[in-house]
Image 1 (cartoon, rainbow, N blue to C red):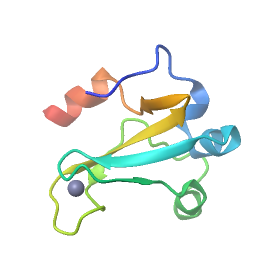
Image 2 (cartoon, rainbow, N blue to C red; image 1 turned 45 degrees about the horizontal axis):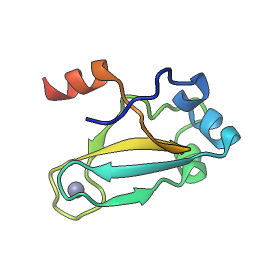
Image 3 (cartoon, rainbow, N blue to C red; image 1 turned 60 degrees about the horizontal axis):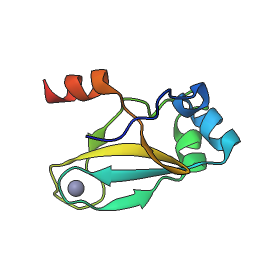
Image 4 (cartoon, protein in one colour; image 1 turned 90 degrees about the horizontal axis):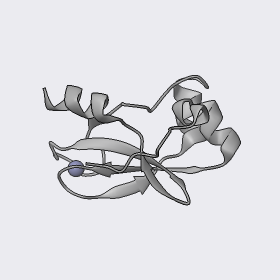
Length: 93
Ligand SMILES: [Zn+2]
């Protein structure tokens, strides 16, 4: 389980907000334990400024053939999970 901020700021829920705040977003895998820094500007070019990484996960892109899940955290003082209990529960189901 990741650690959640007491209250997730609104800006953490869109790419524009994250870029504006200048925070780093990292991606890590549940299985291979690799991690990387997300290029927010590149992602924004591929999606949009209102795109949200909140409660989003995708199949591992960090290790070829890995069947784990990639999840996101933003770094503001410390790394905060970009998902809540509701999202985590949905992933388990
Ligand atoms: Zn992996």
